[in-house]
Image (cartoon, rainbow, N blue to C red; front, side, top):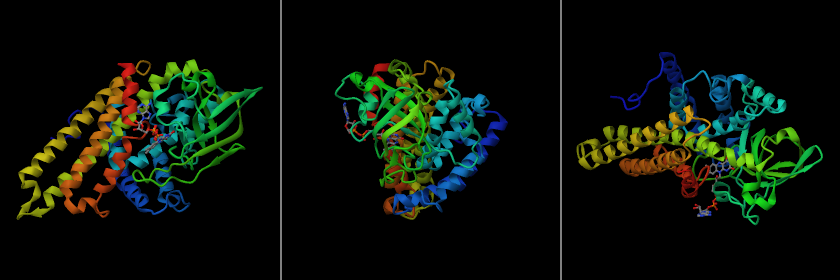
Length: 406
Ligand SMILES: Cc1cc2nc3c(=O)[nH]c(=O)nc-3n(C[C@H](O)[C@H](O)[C@H](O)COP(=O)(O)OP(=O)(O)OC[C@H]3O[C@@H](n4cnc5c(N)ncnc54)[C@H](O)[C@@H]3O)c2cc1C
């Protein structure tokens, strides 16, 4: 039985869509990810002639950016059953996690904008849904040079509050401070979902959330980040100097509201990561399995050697456990958006990213020397997977936070 299909319960129409996305992901996303990964300088990833822009255009042309946008603003969220959304996301992660994260984060400010009644935010969400060219690109700006895990853990210590602050002056908020070089899409984003300190005496618990365009006076960017894994994902700092935003852009102006929604936010982000990285884990296993069938040593394909066979079965077991766990959590949370299983989502993110890293490492061993060579896909998968254990929160600090939701 094909392990891809074991719990697949979707309509014929959804299966056709999945086939289309599979073609796109393996013929466009995977090769683009490899091409971008091999570029020497991160500036080249976002150069005018970069294949990155073709990926954005094709992703939008296929309406994949609408998957999580509500119908009220022109999206498809209500039309797809959660199993279909999940399979599409897993397939994209299978092809290239860096680009999948880039595409997903690109929609984040607009997806959240759609949740708020302010006409300015509703319009922003509608404009994004209608954007077929990839001109509107979002980012999620939370990490700061001095505050990484502090954001994951929260707390009311006034000496440990956000460095980026927003102060209400008349009809506008004035924003100052710097977001770290880790912001995904940081140097190419046109809009940000921006976490700011509103009440300094409450530390991290004094935060609010703004959704803003990034072409306002006083905003500048850092240079694209050079890093080990997910090199296809652009990242960079964003600096705010006396940036004035209208009140309507402060989507969550009260820290108490943020606290109530914190669990939903954690469940949402970690849930998506869990599914994407389960896809990467499966990709690494598939590469190792195919290689073991072809590579001859000792006069037979190495798959015939018991040590390789047992290792592959162990990898298969881990991959299927991570996929099944991610699916169970994702489907539950899709059915319970107002009271999602937060600890389960974090557990699934940790399990999927750790499984992807372990399986990619084992795959490297099965590839022998070729596992280290850039001509083969495994070393990139390993680097991409490893980044996942830090991405959107270090797994250990996420786990500490998740314990509050058990
Ligand atoms: C690929 C990738 C994509 C990312 N995308 C984004 C993005 O889109 N937007 C964004 O804002 N950020 C993004 N990040 C940043 C990411 O969220 C942070 O790197 C992460 O939260 C950790 O922060 P830090 O790097 O400052 O590590 P630190 O917080 O300095 O942590 C260093 C170590 O100390 C430990 N530690 C820290 N504090 C505590 C504590 N109180 N108790 C116990 N242990 C502790 C941590 O577990 C970790 O092992 C991304 C990161 C990566 C790798």
